[in-house]
Image (cartoon, rainbow, N blue to C red; front, side, top):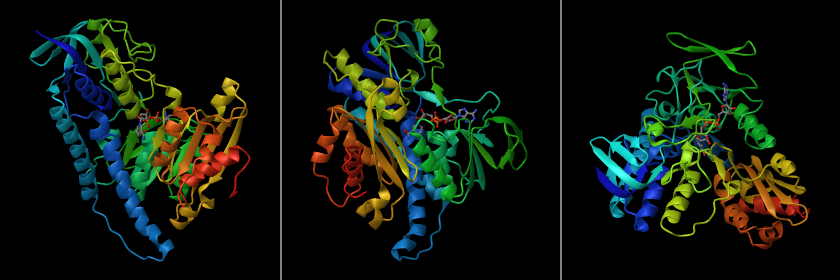
Length: 455
Ligand code: NAI
């Protein structure tokens, strides 16, 4: 048995970033990873999805160029589009491999399993570690009645790399994965239907954002059934039929199940380490990511914080900095940005109107449409709006919600601003370059102060 100071299980954005920071701080981490470095995000999630979305946007842009007086016809090669997504994922994973070498991080390619509170078996190796960070991420959650078979009923892992583009696709779940995949396949001509159990798609966004996205998806001829459950499934030779709770049926060549993800705890044998889980089956941790066992920590998708790559990264950094004796920033989960990479894109940071009301905060709302912004008009990206929520008395910015072109980048203006406690007056007092989409944020903030100039 080998004794080490810090063992990290899993190399997704939580684990690999924690490893790099730990190496920088002289903690000599050993990382156990059974598969490719980079986890779901780099290999089967965020990164290849963005490659497909970029291809879809490029293809759609050719059709939309007519508005500029440009006529062009476009053709696509699906195999090459998927090849680009695969290559992008491979390049990202190679990047992590390079960073591990550069930082002298030792990687064990094996499946980790606890044999005691501080003892982990990984293939032929066994380690005893003073500190162990569990960062094993999440897996696709299955509905009890809809089991994936990887061919006719698939999860996001398969949806990103289908060798042939289906003629029709039914997506169960109108959450982040559901709408991003819908956008991709619809762009290339697949007939897409989304079935969402709650009364609106992207139900965790502001209601008017869901409404705007629904409008755009419908305009693109994506069918949306909301407020309805799938009650049954019948598989045929060529297609699958879903029965819905409202008596309707949806037939498609392929069904994508995208109803959320679950913590990936198999086959860690956490019970052998004595680690406690929450009622929902996540690893139970305190504010410092300590489990109930001293020296054992958990970060990322396996704990009950948002299942987002950037959240996991911050949790890992904060944890290893504390282990190294530094005083890291406290993570403020209310300032955790969220992005959806459809077109129009969606992003938010801070609280929603419902959350502010629940907190008893008196607030003002400012909105501004893309349509009224010069840069948006010039580039023909006129769909969507930005909404800014500020405290009535103090003018402190408490929430920003966006739908429109570039929203996933525009949101970044607010991240340091809100982290520093910015008021609406601070935002509007800062010169925003003209003409840019950032002026939509500026105008929405002015509107919250009752001072919009171009509305
Ligand atoms: P999700 O939680 O975003 O959405 C699942 C959707 O399925 C919800 O709208 C839910 O109401 C619906 N649903 C649940 N049960 C259903 C049923 N029986 N029938 C119909 N609809 C049902 O989960 P998703 O999209 O699978 O994503 C998993 C995780 O990965 C999320 O936490 C998400 O934040 C993360 N992710 C983040 C991305 C990003 O930041 N851009 C991209 C992809 C995933």
